[in-house]
Image (tube, rainbow over all chains, first blue to last red; front, side):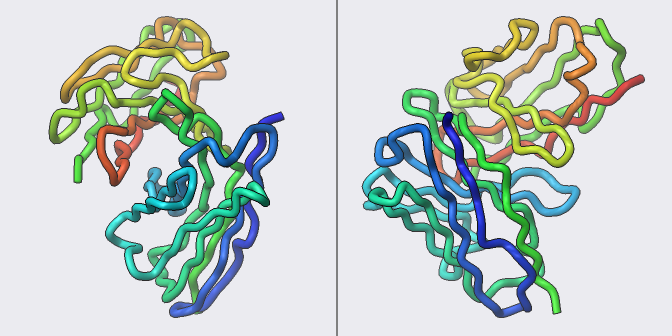
Length: 119
Length: 107
């Protein structure tokens, strides 16, 4: 079964750090671009970052550039998001998502992990 | 960045109704336009990719059309399980951007 399972969310103070993980199973992880997408409470979807199959290309939404780092470990079939200098506006459910081959769309999503930035 | 604007933001409909949601891009995205369905507390689900291709396992009552800057998602006969929020998303350039969402609720 194709599956993405996020972990690492929680409550963190403003200015703090958190590392999210996404464990992948059921497909060859190293063949796919991967992304993080977030959703603030009661709000819409916002793409955050993506990473190429071999990790050689990474892209970020402007609001997280310099604070967040996306990475992957193909040997462990895992995706990561290191989040530093967290702000209240980073509070959201964070989803990892696979960009389907030939689809140019997010065809598989995890269940999400909640990040709350509050004092 | 490409801005995506959906209309309406919400609509009320009945089972069996034909429902149409539109999405407009601030610049040409060719056919790199996708549609997702999201139910409360759940992850989004891909319905349509590259404007009109139906994702595997998605009922044929869902269809998409358009190219360039104007796109449409149509549900031909609304079913009880279709009450949800729908998002368009462009995959023409990075950053990938989503519309603000259209909530379909019961009339």
